[in-house]
Amino acid sequence: MIANVIKKTTIALAFATLALPSAGQDLLARQAPVDKKMRAVDSVAIQRLFDQENIDNPAAELYPDWEDRYINAYGNVELPQELKIDLRHFCMPTTNRIVTSNYGYRRRFRRQHKGIDINANKGDTIRAAFDGKVRIVEFQRGGYGNVVVIRHSNGLETVYGHHSKNLVKPGDVVKAGTPIGLAGRTGRSTGVHLHFETRLLGEYIDPAKLFDFEHQDVTGDFYVFRGRGRGTLLGKHDLNASLLEGTELAENVEASEEEVTYTSSEEVKNNQRAQRAARNIRTHKVRKGETLGSIARKHRTTVAKLCRANGISTKTKLRIGQILKYS
Image 1 (cartoon, one colour):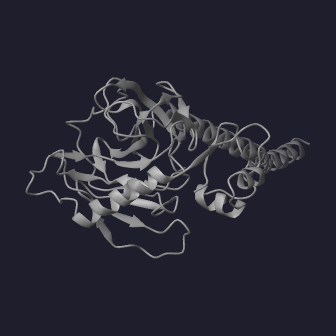
Image 2: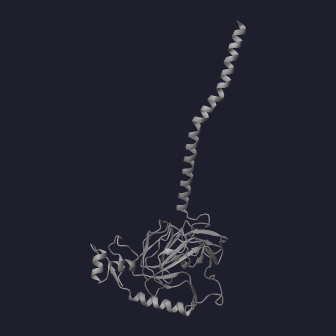
């Protein structure tokens, strides 16, 4: 009898021992989806924190702090040896295509022109070039006039000068294409235009290396900054072109007069021709109820010519107050 009881007990214990791993495996199997979901939740939370940090302080990994008092605030900051700058998801700051003054040394004024000037009509909408956060909005009587400075998540800072009116305030988060000002001639300016600068940690980069205003496009999908004075374009915006050759940036703004590249006589003539053409441009301010067809008839032109002159399509929705060129 006792032997039978011991035998039954031994068998029961054996079955219990065998069953434990199976139960543990079942528990782990039930727990696995929960762990996977928790990891997914953690990943989403981390990404949200990262995105929020990028909104609150764009390119924080590059810039030492958020400076909202001075436009030129990075005198002692070390530049990266190499940085790949994403130029995709952009918006042209203005639809105007005529560059009236290039980047580089101005012999007439004996000083460096640290951006480019694009012809504009008073009241034209100026837009943010990339997503970012507004760092500076102020008025400088003897310089930029009404100026806006934006720091972008791709590492660039862009400067927009001579506005007749600023439309944003410091700390505003903007998307590429957000209206930030209206074109004007405030500050040190001889005519209505947009003064546009592109910078990295205070280092000036010729905007023409990044933006093609004539064709209303960026010059490549990426720009690789390689220390002071050099950079490389990677891939055309249509994604079909091969790697472009490295291009030299404009000279260091602190270089001596003998070291800088002067504007050639041909470039001066081209600028003068562009300025004469800009003065001859006639414009129309869109009124309520007007269409491309009615505007074309009024000025004895065609819808196709209006579209080409303004870089728009026949499906573009006109805004009241929008300025259109018709010659």
